[in-house]
Each structure stands twice: as C-alpha cells, then as structure tokens.
Amino acid sequence: MSLNPHRFQSAIHDFQSARQRAAVQEVLALVTGKSARLLSYDDVAQKLKLRARSERGIQNIPLDAIVGSVGRYTDFTRTFLPRRVEDQHRWAGVKTAMEKGEGLPPIEVYKVGEVYFVVDGNHRVSVARQEGFKTIEARVIEYKTDVQLTPDVQPDDLIIKAEYANFLKETRIHEMRPNVDLSVTTCCQYEKLTEQIRASRELLQEESGQDVTLQDSAAYWYDNLYLPLAEAIRDRGLLRWFPGRTSTDLYIWISENRAALEKELGWEIQSDAAATDLILERSVKSKTGSWRRARTIARYTERLFADILVPLSGYAESWDALDQAILIAQRENAKLHGLHIVETKDEAESPNALGVKKRFDQTCEDAGVNGTLAIDVGDITNRICERAVLTDLIVVKITNPPGAGVSALSSPFRTIIGKSSRPLVTVPSRASQFKRALLAFDGTDRSKEALFVATYFAEMWKTELIVFTALDGRRVTAETQEYVRRYLELHEVETEYILSERGAMDALKQAIEERVADLVFMGSHGGTVLQRVFVGSALDYMLRESKVPLFVCR
Image 1 (cartoon, rainbow, N blue to C red):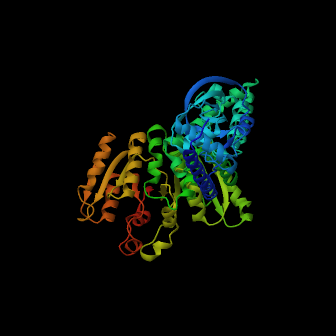
Image 2 (tube, one colour):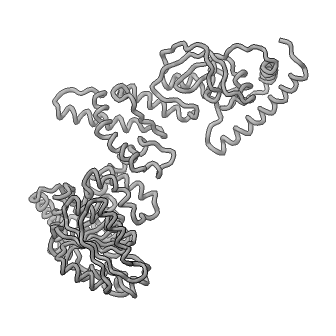
Image 3 (cartoon, rainbow, N blue to C red):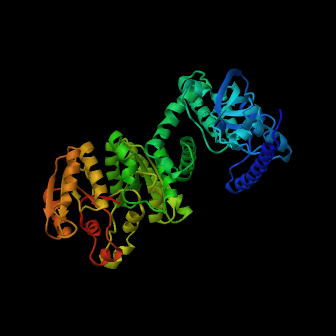
C-alpha cells in the first residue's frame, strides 16, 4: 500500500489530536464518575456465562453500539479515541487508506445483546468514528444472553448484569413471564428477590402439601407480590421521586422499608403506606392535596380507608373513638391500628397499659374487625403524627378542644391537624353511623379535599349530603358553590345547598342542628396564625361546639 507523504503526515496530526481528546475524555470521566474505558469481552463473557454462538453474516452495524474489544480494550477510550502513542503509524495508515478510497475488509465483531465487541478492526473503528461515520461493515457473530446489554452500559454495570443473569438462570422466571423486566441499578439486590421467591415456595408447599419448583414459585411471586406493587409504582408516578432508578429498585426499597417499619411499630402495614413513607422522606412538607392525588386511583377501584389509626388514652371516654373507628372499619373492610402512648418504658409493661391492649383486642374480636394495638413511649402528638403516615385515617376522641384566642395555639389537636398528612375524624361523644353529612365548603383547597371525601361517602356509603357555604361578600360568593355543583353532578350525587349570609360559625352550627346531620366535613385551619388567633377559626369553634363527629381534611 503506497502512501501519500502529505496525506500521511496530515493523518499523523489527526492521530495526535485524537490522543489529546482521549486524555481530556479520561479526565472528564474522573470528574463525572462515568467510565471512559472500553469493555473487555472476556470479562463480559465470563460474568454473563456466554456460550452458544451463531453466525449472522456481513451487515452494517451502528458504530456507537460498539462498546468493547477482544484483547485491545485498553488501547482505546469508550469512543475509540486512541490512547497509545505506539499506534500512531498504524492508525495514520488506516486513515490514509480510507481517504484514498481503498477497499478495506469488513471488521469482525461479537454481538451480545444490543452491543458489539471488536475482534478484528479496532483501528478501522477508531478512524471511522473520528470521521463521523454512523455505521461500518462487519462480520457478526452473536452470543445469546437473557440479559439486556445496551450501548450505555458501564463496567460496574457488568456486576449487576451478571447477578441478573444468575437470577434468571436460577429462577427461570423469564421463561414463565417472557416480558419480565426486573432490572436494578445497584448490586447485591437479586439475592433479596430470591429470598422472597424461596419464602413464597415454602408457603405454597405448606398450603398444597406438595413439592413446588422454584420456577413456579417465581411466577407466583411475580404475579401476586411483585406485579401489584410495581404497577402501583408506575401508575402513581412514584419513580419521579427517585430519578435514575427502576420499578424493581423501588419495589425492593419499599419491601425493606415495610419490614423495618413493621418490626419497629409492631404493625402489619400495606406496601402503599410504606411507599408513601419513603416519598415523604423525600418531600420537605406534605402539601395540601397530596393525599387526595395519591388516593384518586384507589377512590374508584377500592375502599378509601384500608388502615385506620386510633389513639387510645385508656380513660373511659377514649373508647368512644374505638367504637367510631370500628363502625368505619366494618364498612371499609379496614384494619385498625390502635396506639397507646406512655411516658416511660416501665409504663409500657404496666397492668394499665396491658389492660388497654386486652380491651382493644377483645373489642375488635367481638366486632369482627382486624386490629392490633401498639404501646409506644414518647410525646403523644409526635407519635400520632409519625404513625399517621402509615395509615389512611386518624380517629381521635375530643377531650380538650382548642380554646379561643392565643390559648388555641397550644392545643394538641392543632398540632396533629397541622402536621399530619392524613384526614382526621374527631369524636365528641358517641359513635355516629354517618347517615347524613354536612360539607362546609368555602372554595379553599382544604375544602376541596373535604369535598373529595364527602363525595366518596355519598357514593359508597349512601350518606345524604348537604353543602353549606357562608358568604363573606369578598372571597366567598354564591359562585363558590358552582365548583361543588359541577363536581357532584359529574359523580351523580344529589344534594341540598345552603348559602348563608350570616356569620359562618353560628350559621354552620344551626344548619347542623336543623338538618340533624351526624357528620361534618371540613377543611383544616386556613389563613395566617394571627388571623386564626384574633379573628377565630371555624374549625376551632366546631371542635369546641359540635356534638357530632368532624371529618377534617387538610
């Protein structure tokens, strides 16, 4: 092959420039943490246990899908920039030949998944990439793998890919569920999934009295444990809180979080609650409307209140809250989570505390309701707020309602309502059947939360609904109720509407009494702290004056 000296010298210059870019690329890799190295085919073949091969003939392959080399993976960067000065003349010779249009033979590659490894022709690939070519002619030999390899795979990813390959080989779940995608982004996760599958196998064998294969157990685990939660993760958009992660990543984290919470709290909790807890750890503050948005799908497909928290002091009047919670649990097929809080660990083992638990257990058993009670140590309001995130509803007895003026700021009920991300039912006296409810609606986001729940009760419980709005001539006008009308018409709920020009508090109390309502839906505190102190809060007023339960939404 004769060389044009001028053209060859120009190619030498291009090689030196390419080597400089290779050095820069490697420095940037240290900064970004993303490797600039080519993958070693031998490492991939060993980790993924590649065996069966087949000839695919000559074809044009995408250059950016070539991610590795057989034997020469240290000579070039990930984009096939040359790294060794010793390759200068050979690289320049290939470039010169390409520019002259001399026919070069196809390169030879191994194909694994969606990527390629160069067997012969590394310099041709390097020059072609620097010249901006998109494809190159290659003789392709394909090695089959059940693991998806894509051009963005990193060296560290090979460990994860190898673990996935072993997991698929052991469980053969991809044979039972061909479209399965259980990819993860961190190592050492597949053993956790395998443990769950083995536990499912033991359960199935115990129930059937027969031997069950690990493959059948994997299919059962996938259909009954993994898939429902993975679909919920996708449907509710939970991955947006965890960028760069997969549904299986989040499934594992939720499973681990759930187990840790159950151990700590002594409750059996639902995976959705554990997911919510994880999400709230990422969120500085739970915003108005977050609970409604999270439950919108469940609102039309299942019961809205699957887990109910009932704090119990042990005093006689606190059992009214349990009676009310039982009535709700029976209608919602919910689980009750009792909570008795004491000041010291010694008190947790005292006859009084154990007596509360015994009465709780017996009351739930008599009512045919699934319930467990935890005895906790610490501040009452903080413990209630911490555990509320794991449930859907709090039912609490009103014993010392907020006072008027500045004294209202120290009310524990204000703290619970302000901090909790869950709606709350306050019980002033006896339990109610929720046959006729009044919705206090003023157009605020909090009152829209109350409308969401009130509509659910009207549809699912057949609760009669009355909508009350107190006009103030400025923010709250007659048009405020139009939002409610459209919303309820959409849900085909018939109701009575009341517009009051009198003061909101007295008029609301009178409307409750005249309509014989046994439940009131309200939003939580609105306005600034100063407004609530000096002007007064309708919610604080109702907590003091109402003879029927309040369903408070935030």
